Length: 277
Image (cartoon, rainbow, N blue to C red; front, side, top):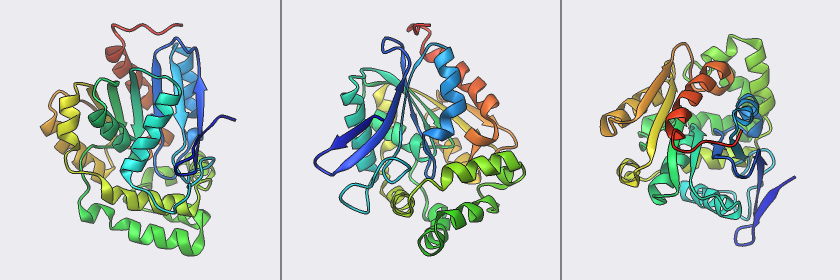
């Protein structure tokens, strides 16, 4: 299995590199509590469409370890992505990120203009959270630390602010449990704390980067609906699609609908760059 090790911090990042190395590269970044398994449907179809698909797991998530410390910042996660893309000799690419993955994609594009053709944020945003948006994680961290990730998965499945639609479908709920419980307690706690370190100038940097910006958001995800609407006001050229009847975990709830939107966005991005297929 491919791992990228960083001697400076002892982080060993698990990644997968699928498809023809000559094809146009897409980078997939999962949400907090996710891992590469969450992209299985998308990876299979994107490969059939002729793309090169790179997916990796964040610190403390499934096969990627935490490294020397039990905490990290958003900038640490940006640096992890930079090291991976340099290791794979990726020039320009499109980054598709879900939730914290969308935040990482926007920060990376803002910091590395010219390296990213486009970002596609799925229930993500370059905007800094308000304190009230992160208050729920006081409880989720407590559940994780005292009861473990299986208990936290059940807690999330009955959470009306995040997973009301997941709970309605047993197949989706079971898949969520399978994926979510592979995250370590330390990884979950560190990721939710890292959300406090999002800088306040990402939107400005993203606009200045010149990369195309796209967004998909579930209509029932109240926090990200608000944040992405605020982003749209600051980046009016951003293409936005709302998935009705879905909340935060759209990648599990509506994979086909989300894939169709992704392909529409990617057609815009790659109209001058044809993938090998």
